[in-house]
Image 1 (cartoon, rainbow, N blue to C red):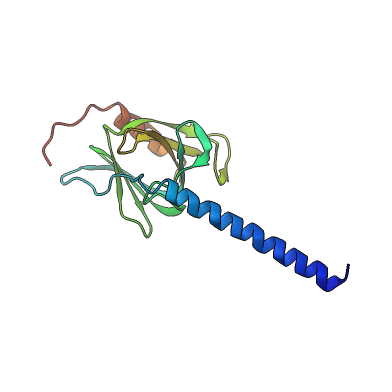
Image 2: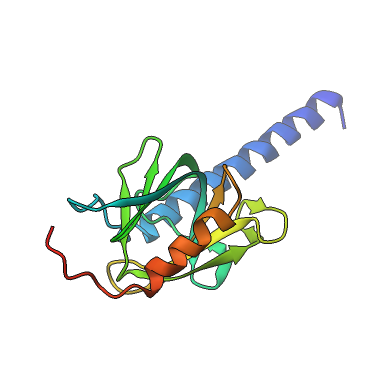
Length: 168
């Protein structure tokens, strides 16, 4: 085989792999097009804490390697986790603010592995929450300032909090 033919075969193979990846991602986006996260922060929510985070992924519950494309939590992004008395707001760069009210939050714990990311033991915060149809999903965050323990206790209190009867 000549050198030019070998290079051509490698380029064609690389293009086929890239095309397959693009096709698979577009199919995932179509499959998950009906899944959305709740947007907007309620009025008069008192901020109790803030943390700079890297949003890593949202996956099916207890399946850390099965990414789902919940809008607007489709792509990794830097942002801020804002803890309030009514829930947690995830304000990511270039996306609308997602607000997970206390009644949507199921649990919060630590994780080591998820799709696209493996970190030191217990280096990720996993938030288990319900999307609009009641399906459980896991969202993973990497806390940039202070480590995961700085927000974990507050998130766990929000998960255990009863639904607030306060008016907005």
